Image (cartoon, rainbow, N blue to C red):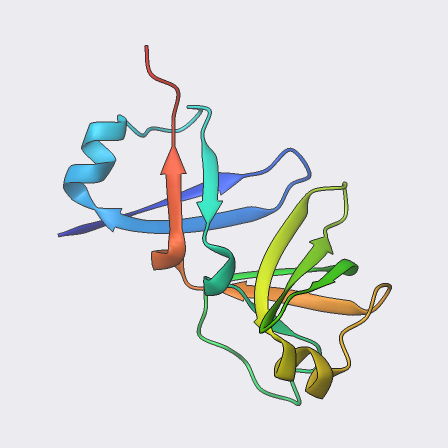
Length: 123
C-alpha cells in the first residue's frame, strides 16, 4: 500500500512524494509538520521545450539555469527557482551539448513522486 504527501516550500512550490504507508506512518506525517524533500540529482530530467507534450510526472518546477559544472562524463546543472531555491540535476555532457544548456536559460525540472524522499526532524 502506498501513501502520498505534498510538501509546500516557503516559495509556494508543491513537491509530491510517494512512499509506502509504513514509511508515512514512521515519519508521522500530517498536515503542518515541517519536512524537507530530498531528490536524487540523477532522477531529475531537465526540459527546455515540451514541444506541445504534457508529461505524466507530478513534479514539474520551472526555473532558470544558474550553474553548469561539466565533469568528465556528466554535468551538474543548477536550476534556480523563483524565490532562490536551487535544485541540482545530473545530466550527461552529451545531453548538455544537445540541449545547449547554459546559464540564464529557462528550464523545467521534472521528476516522479517516487524519486522524492521526505525527512522530518526527530524528537
